[in-house]
Length: 113
Image (tube, rainbow, N blue to C red):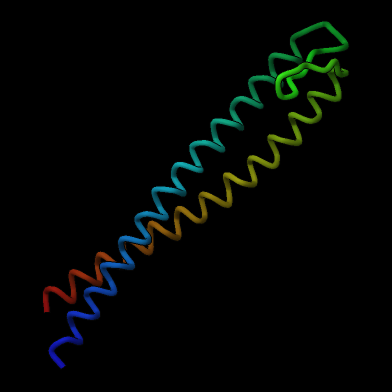
């Protein structure tokens, strides 16, 4: 019977470590997606200021010529997809942060009793 509280604390500590690890990874992913979204926004804004009808688009190690309107349309589509990813990652971050906070609080209660 005396091992039962220790097992509970050990399990909660493992859960806390896993949640914190997932939270750190989610925050890194969120930063990366937000950075990509910002780049897409700035590129689209920059392209709309040009008078050219055709632009050169990077494609790996080469460039292809493309209609500016088509390229900006692709960028807007990418921005929408990235915004959806940001929302999903924000929800995941909130869930993981809540899980971490609740686990810490539960550990305090178990250790205090």
